[in-house]
Image (cartoon, rainbow, N blue to C red; front, side, top):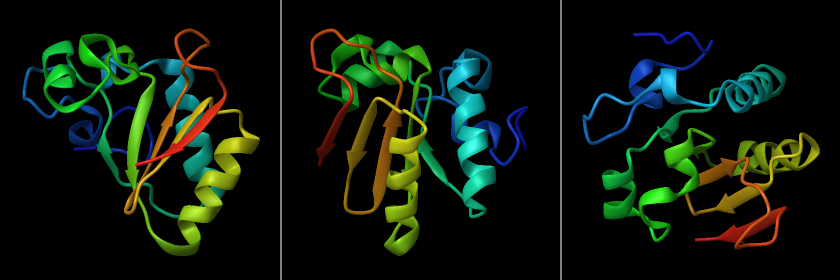
Length: 124
């Protein structure tokens, strides 16, 4: 089922543990930028992880119960090839402050300065 955010489904934006957190908890400003990025690029951005409850984030992430996914300001996007390069290039241009590059995905977030310097890029 489509969400209120064009191009994405409610399932893509919801916590994978089934707790019920979802698109309504995603940061609206962050999601506007993700939708703009998707429309600009013109190809699908399949989201594999977006909103996470603190307990689920603790289970799967090194950031504990308060990672950026728990604030609704992060997504992981399944992507390969030249589209991966274009996604990273435009994420820089649009000012995303966290860009993680994995083998088959890109993590984008809008974290703020704090424990880690921002902007920041890393690999998995």
